Length: 164
Image 1 (cartoon, helix red, strand yellow):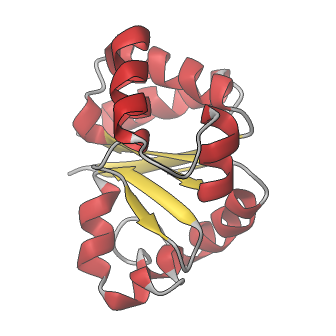
Image 2 (cartoon, one colour; image 1 turned 30 degrees about the vertical axis):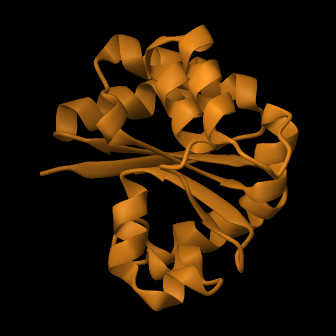
């Protein structure tokens, strides 16, 4: 049974350190989702509102590994922007958002994920953090042992609001 471990990061760099450590643990790209505000995406990645896919591919090629794949995913056409909520989502949570229905696309994105991947109390906590510029990382683990190891890594790095 999979378990979702979530945490926030105040900077892109601290999120990248965590992702690199998770990669060494054996976490795959398909297990990671990232949610950020549109403003944070622009500020943290020095983007303009135009075409982000080419930049995402370039960043992925330069950075390499899982960090590059996750960053490229945030900047590519595979990421889903939810303008009403001002959020951008990448990874496995994209399909969770689609499954949550129209409510997720009209501004209640995190609320739409309640019961899908993130409990209500966590969603409310993360909503405020995202508005303040945090980066939300969600890792879908394969079993209890992997969940414990992911949580331990997040506790060792500069993660906040760790929830399992």
